[in-house]
Length: 289
Image (cartoon, rainbow, N blue to C red; front, side, top):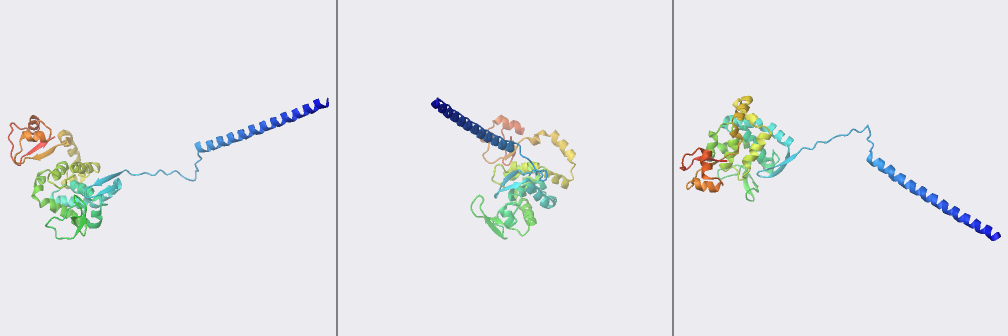
C-alpha cells in the first residue's frame, strides 16, 4: 500500500513538471511570433512625421555633346548658354548672313554648351583649328590627331566673329550663302558637305539641337518673319521634312556609278532629280534621298 502511494506521488510529480515545461515553451513561442509581427507592421507601415515635409528632387536629363570633346550637359546648361550668346549670334547673322540658329547650334555642340576644355581655356566656341593663316595665340588639344593646334581668343565674342569670318572667307562655303537665311536644315547639311566636320551625323546633331531648343526663332527675329506664316508654309511643303542629301558631281561620275555608290537605281536618281536623260555636268548638284 505504501509502495502504491509512492508510485502515485512520483507519477503526479512527473506529469506536473511536464505540463509546466509545455506551458513555458508555448508562451515563449507566442512571444517570439508576436515580436516578429510587430516588426513587420513597423516596416510595412512607416510613420511620416508631419513636421518634416517630403521633398521630391527633380533630376534633369543629361545628354552628351561630342565634337572637339565629349561633355555631359543638362537642359539648364544649354538654355543658359543660349541666353548668354543669342544676341551675339543675331548680330552676326545681320552682319554676315549666317543663320543665328546655326551659329548657336554649332556653338552649343562644339563647346559643350560652354563646358568644353577649348571653350573654358581658350574661349574657342567653335573648335576652329589654327590653320596656316593664324598668327594669334593657340592651344593644343587632341582631336582628329593628338595635340592639334586650336585658336585661342581673349573674349567669346572674338570667337563668334572669327567663326563668321572663317565661313565667309572660304570659297568652299560660298554655296551656303545662296540658301535662304532661314533654311537651317540646308545650312546644316551644307556645312558637312563643305568639310566643316568629319562626323557623318553632324547635320543631324545641329538640326536636333535647333529643333529641341527652338533656335530658329532667332532667325525669324532677324528676318522679321511671321512665325504663323512660316508654319503654314512648312505644312504646305511636306518635302522640307524629308531627309535629302545633296551631292556635287565630280569628274568621272555617271548615274550608273552614283546608283552603285548610294544604293539607288538609275531610274530612281533620274526621278528624284527630274532628269530626262543620263547627262551630268561637273559641279551639278543632285539630290540623294
